[in-house]
Image 1 (cartoon, rainbow over the protein chains, first blue to last red):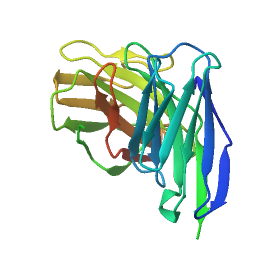
Image 2: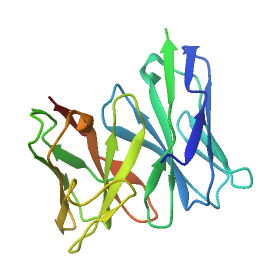
Image 3: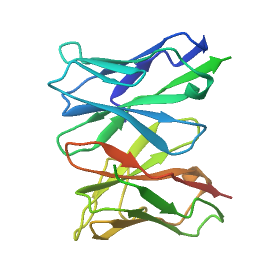
Length: 110
Length: 113
């Protein structure tokens, strides 16, 4: 079963705007990983944030982690049409097994 | 990052038959996993593919239905046995370190008629 919840389920924005999506989880984590999936294809790894980290950046992406609230957020700045995709957070346990959230569908219109 | 390939990329099968999916990683990895993504859904872990020993299955998945092999640190197979239309999904393998990034293959899109 999925241990993470993501909101919103869907997000529609215009190019240049920022997109923020949130992920909550129920049990402890070793790390949390964010992925992008385009049209049912393979998953692209975006960022890994460890349980002892609070924020990480990669290009236009910023991920935060609040272990006290068991939540994480992914911010995409200055979005582009090519950012249109589904975004998933995945909680990793100590064995490396990932449990995925339901995902957020992001549509960026020109 | 590991580069992962899967074969076949897609297949259409008749009910009652079996399909074996191959996953190849371009470097030795500690952990390999198999996931299922049903239409319009998120990913669900099927099992951990253990090198040289039996796979570890998640609740709801059994070895008779999804036998898995992992003969070495770069290769694994998943068989979907005695298929029914409910098995129509995308099957993905992943690989990585126990505490590091986990990378995914492109997936195998299976349709069962």
